[in-house]
Length: 370
Figure: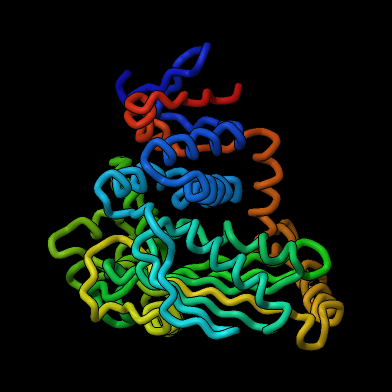
């Protein structure tokens, strides 16, 4: 079977040019099976598959199962490790540093979260920095595990091997989009924040270039190699390449630039593996922090404050005909619930990229839902 079409078990083939929906549990089992056959341990494969599928459930389609083929390539090439445990560089009660040795990123982050959850009842605030993790996928996919416990969580990362975002006023990349995620409870639905310190992401511009349809971004979110603003993702593929603008674009990009620098300090700086190391391997420097509101004014007081503000924002007046205010994470949680019922919509290129691995390792490919 070629990669242009995917055979559905017991049914008709799937056209790879169309979006199709897949059962979440079946998709997770498929991803887990491929990762196991690729060489990850059962726990590593389970954790990685869960985070990738959770990302797609929440609508983060460039950072979900879309990444699986790249992960499998890195496992085969030895660039994603599977043997061993993270090396403890520093271990204080409320501050821990690990060297991840390029072990699977989602597995490392979930291990760090469990450590923080266990300690936070005694320490109030627990921070973990990880250097030389492999890629950690979608940051939003981790947050609900903390907010479901009544905890606040911050998570951010950078990749010292990639430089695609220009400093404000420049037109050559010097750092990564540097996502910043945070989740906190409100007494109702949690607020789940996941934004980049840049106007767009490497994953989105790369996907648009692979599609080859000449799509443009919604605005001049990039800068070409002459310093001109552009909405054409192809400027990222020139020689020399253009760059992604910091959040705020040409006018207000100093704000995104400042946030990007903060992420670099929290990740590469605290973990001890920044851009001065001249790293070439795809991966991540990671910083996460878990906070227990009970150690401050108390969880009830915290949720009264956050819940009141959430309700007040939702009730804020909008222009007639406009939708109501939506808090960060509301759309993702709604989509998560809907796709758990009706299936996860995958970009057309995802399943064809995985078919060669499935065929080679005899892993059944899940069929699309009707």
